[in-house]
Image (cartoon, rainbow, N blue to C red; front, side, top):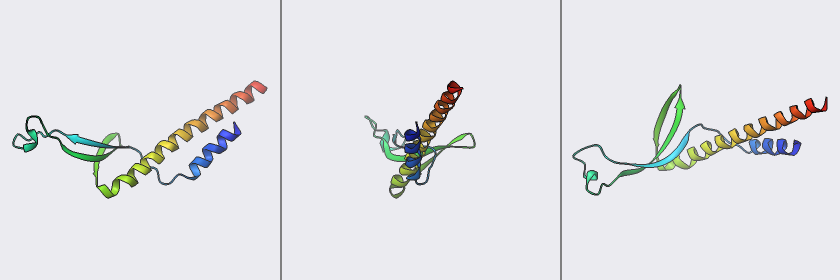
Amino acid sequence: MRQRHQDCLAALADCDLVLPGTVGTYARRCANLGCHYRADPPQLHGPYTLWTRPVDGKTVTVRLGPDQVAQIQQWSDNMRRLRDCVRELRAIGAEAAQALLDAS
């Protein structure tokens, strides 16, 4: 249990900035009737890389430029690792508390 705890803390020590949300690449069908992308078969606008995140209870989406994608993706991945580590630390704490209760 202690080794798992130390492993989680070590993983957090290597963590850089964290950023909530997801990064994804999308292509969109055009709604403009005059657009040449509405051909048959349809061509799609894009691909676009978008960062989507919650802000004050609403979903906010921002289009990322090519020079921003790698950094935003890394920070988003760091957030996922942070959540995983916190989940593991909570599970370890629950195990330790149960072991303490069982010992008494």
